[in-house]
Image (tube, rainbow, N blue to C red):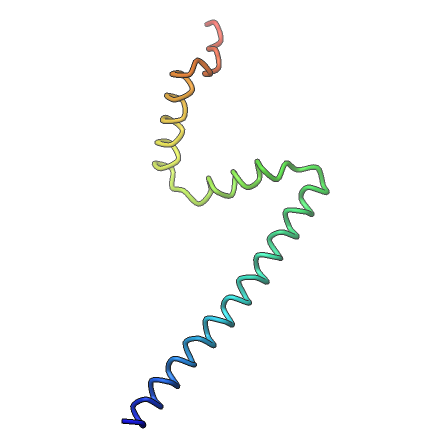
Length: 87
């Protein structure tokens, strides 16, 4: 039975160590992303809008159109929709 516990302990230790390494990599990548946003901001870009662009690029066209349609609907309901130009 102790042999089975040894295997389970080894597996558990391996999982924990892998997760810890990945968490450290994730932190490093997060820091790198922060640095890129800071660089963009230093070059005059609006990081809030940049984050929104990144978010939109992750969506497929249908999902993006659906969200835009819902946003337009909500803005209209609140009287915040941009006025349409005269034709």
